[in-house]
Image (tube, rainbow, N blue to C red; front, side, top):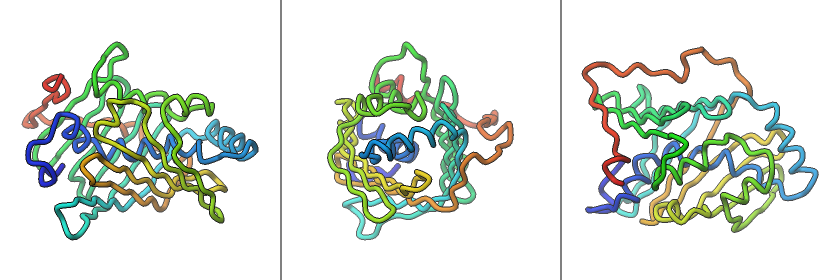
Length: 240
């Protein structure tokens, strides 16, 4: 997103910057299960996920960089449909759109007339495949499934809020992302905030508001027609 932090970033750092918006949000949604450390609370969380089919929210995103004295903030909206569709729009009008659908991820820059396409084929290997494997199964139905993806560094419950710090188990993901912090309520297990910390010392935090559980969505919510004058690239293929 911003090349100000590292003059010559590695492919792993470029990966983190290009897609930190979508990854940061989706990691946070996955992580909420582990915050339910008691048996009854965990069972309630799984029961809630069984009935969760769609989700939408507004958010304020804060990007903190060591090279900047003030954080960068922007508003946006997110929509998700289980198990593998989401649409993340940053800015109004949208400056960046991350569109996840079966088989691919599109990162769209409408003002620049540019689209980055990341194929997500089942047999694909490499850094992008390793990172995206954390997002593909949707909301896991067991603690064992989540713990196969994350190390739990800390867990606290204060009043009606659960706070969790996670570390990705994948060595590839840890090359650009060190920790994921998650806040969620203990009533409906609704996501309140996520924060992703990167290896260069920067961070990305999203605070969610006006969340709606199981809203109805237009049939074309996760579609986006690429205009003929837009340039389409596949950065993942170039960095392998």
